[in-house]
Length: 358
Figure: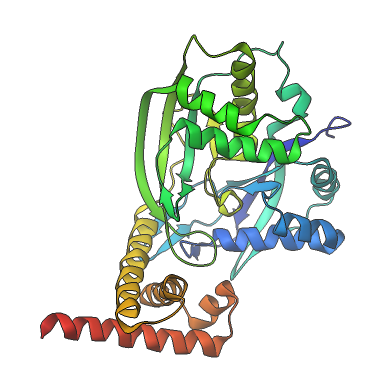
């Protein structure tokens, strides 16, 4: 199915809902968990490696298809086809993926929303790192499209900007971890800083949820890059290699929760993805996190940011009419703990309101 020796590949599962489902804005966590559980069932050690790896050797997308907003949820209509993309970045998960595709399960089990698996196709062709690095290969486009919110970690915060150094640092980290064809990091990134420029961009920011708690501010859209004529030929070749790699690796952080989905070229038309619900939830989590952080600092509380983010996530999701059972399961904390934190968060918010009205 895949050529012998393939090291990276991207596939798309074809999915269909037997009835209309309302999905929570952060349903990508369920996709993440389901995929790793599928690996665990036949190869527990590989599942642990994929889960614990730094960087992780896979990415997933969110559902691509006819989702639309309905109240505080995303509606997936009945019998409407959608796709879900998975990429893997090492030979062992490629081998596992190939065997798994030969005997796909009938259902993708999202919480309360089982989706029928009707087939699959190759979304990104199987290849090797040597092929991606081949100096004889045609030069790739010097433009990228970001299909899902994309962000970088920078000094403890999210940086929602396609700065060339951050882009290529993201690709380089995975490339050096998995390719066996290392690129000197500091000297290369210094050259990127000096010789890669953004010539054109069309992006917009979105706030979204990803991972266990908190919110992420990211960008979607497209950029076109330019290369200085002063860049050495070797550095140019590294840039071309990493650009070819970008669709497989994704861009930025939390690519295993659907963020940073990347394609080569400037794409004006993209799979439409509802964003207003995620924006509202992400903004509410950020707002509550700031309130709780400031309160805890005044009170001399410890673990300020982590606790504030956890309280904010629980309260914002409760305001979004999610059950405490679901929230506790997603955050991997006991139900009673989630219940206590929800009460403490509500009390802290009420104290904030009282202070403002006095």
